[in-house]
Length: 460
Image (cartoon, rainbow, N blue to C red; front, top):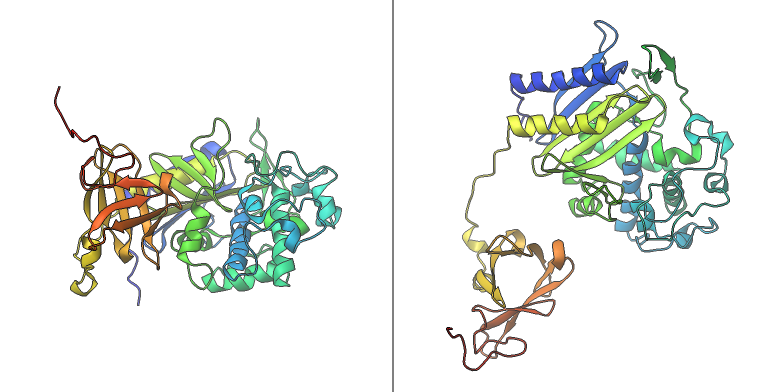
């Protein structure tokens, strides 16, 4: 039985609706929908439109463009978790004959495969799928623009290849895999490849006059895994919760966290942004946001999740350009996080049965040379090593079945931390990737690399 979602304060709801109203007005878009999820579900939605008395709602479909890429990435990660492929596999191993087979699956997910950003002309977003019936038509004669693995270069054809990879390994069409493996398990009943009423129409708004023009809505065919989907604010809030917490019916929490981890360096001049495995990363207002943006002719969309604040926001509009979706979605997260900050869980000691005396012996201060660190015990036998001065390398570690821990972030990502014991069983020191941490700084009897001066500490 789940707890009912706690409603937002009226003042918070007004601030959210005001932000949506400003976005619709200043962005000059026919309609604009915003929604917020917190504590596992949607807690607010609001909309504005140019039609008096006829606003869309959280059940109105909009085209979400490149937000589709996150869904495709989830399908690929499922194949990895089932052991059907490895992210370091070259594409050629599972999808031969593309001409770009040296690129790995991970590089395609992270847009570091060196592929071009777009397919050859004519512009794929405004032309029917029949123009590109085969992968060769999507890739063109010169699909590679950069050395493989060297640069982040956003690539729509790269996600076309990933969709074809899913079909080749799974043996079903991308749409069928999407429906059976993500949409149905998560209850995303209003997310679809083709629009299902009620849905918004796509419009282009003249940049210098208050007039509009309908945009075409093409079936993207092979390019569908890069940007085909239609969805609603309510469905995307459910998907945002999944991106924050995982769902064992689709993808476990550890794999979702892996998707959220930076996989490629940001481009020059864009140090506030990054990309994981199918997920965009943004640092804004002191918060790390994960999700994705999307656009197709007539539509723009954004989904951001702040894991630390447990707040997600969705923004949808039906204009080719105008509203700043990324900023508005980030503002919706900020409004809720600042107006109604999350209450921390009450501190509780661990149950007596879970107290590990051997592990407890390791807690407390340790010294790397003269640098002071603290080892703090965490959940599931994990530990955190942090500088006591507040400056230095901090990392969290996950316990290994065979003993010791493996680093999960920062400088020590993937490095092994282990206690080294003396013949009598007492702890001599901690070894972290060859770094020695001792209980005292440069103690004569400790195993300090290079030894300690026999005269010991001295004054001037």
